[in-house]
Length: 329
Image (tube, rainbow, N blue to C red; front, side):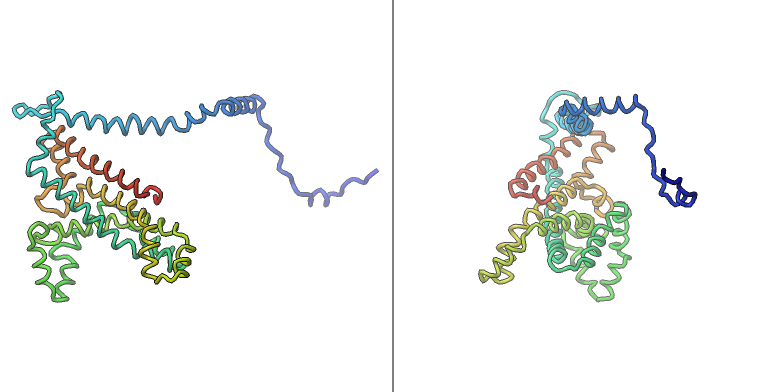
């Protein structure tokens, strides 16, 4: 017969956690439900995709469909009421000179912002990918993403103060004795104004600042996918660094540039806060939509204006897909 364990032995023995008893009824129901779903994978798919598809199909696409339907209505000039009868009169009014100027002004600004952000973003993304140490890479990632953590309105109004006639930028220009150059720039028709905070130049500067992170990140992700073996093979074949960049790195990273341009171009097309805060009396599409929808109550014309950037972006996305931009997202 073995001797009984001493009190010290019982005290030093590790305490084992015993599982809590589970209700047989509850365990049986869970097992049956799990087996039921396992035998019906289509039901699992419906439960997983049903809510997001419902949101996209009914709420999001339904809103867009309602918007397009309203664009084919018209506004009665006498009563100011919407005439719910199919007509192309609203779209015909988009071809007036004033409305065409709004479309061309917005599209030109979107193209200029996209070009500028790509030229600024590519060197930084290239440095992050090829030369930055892990510590520096983390610091640069933080520097790129940090502005996105603050309010969009706060950033826009901060730039309004920076670009004002009494702002710090004008003061620095004065200290550098470049007042004449700035005044000459502001006197250029179409892009100038009383000050940088009330000109197309100021709008351009703020747009570039606000949307630059959306260009840096896709380009950096695209550059990360370029195999280093390709670069080494190019060097082994006698190509110089510039030739390697132009004929190997740039073509392979170009889908990232196109992917970033999707964000910068589309966001500039639809934005109304920056032009309203820093612009003059020259409207952009977003301002026109807000004015027709809110002030004048011309819902059909506002919907027709909204259809313009939608059509532009559909064509843009088709071209971007052919260039492989979605692979860099």
